[in-house]
Length: 277
Image (tube, rainbow, N blue to C red):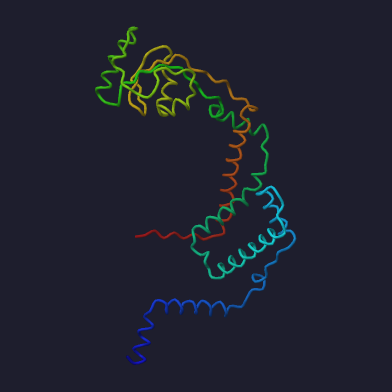
């Protein structure tokens, strides 16, 4: 094998490709004029205090000098790797980095809202707009007879069972085994929904009191139902729901602030969308 063949064979080796690429990156970085601002890492008193305070919040004690030195060393290491990664463009087209930067921008845009305190008038306005959202849950006391999974046969059984029950007779022979009780007393709507499903709980609101009706569908199948009692929650009072309505106010204000900030920044960009043909 002459030297030309040997060189050609060597150039086909993956490790050689890696070394060449590394040498090119090194050459590019070495040839780049250093930015003295980027290359200078300052650990001042305020930064050291911030690092120490974070430690104290986490461990409920001040760091020792050795621990503080370690925190400072880790900060410097983070800064070195962060700046080198930026200089290599490693942040480009990275969805994780973009999302974190987006979240930081949103935090800046909503900082005033997060610190704001709504007035009682503003909170009351939210309650008046949707009083049902803040009212106490409706509770139900009811009896149910489970007739099995949804099917024509189950519906036929429901019709026969209703005739007997409405006549004051027993319809137990139509009941199917199920891991649920036949009687419920003062159960909140959310608890009923957790067992039977939301549509079943919603249907109880419109059923007549004291009468067997059905069939009523649930996540389990078919039932005939008699609602014995249904609560009528009082109108919500601000002092009783203050925390919930305050949370809603902040969520709504945050969404408005985010959208306003986005529209303001978007106005500085020319967005071109090319759909695939």
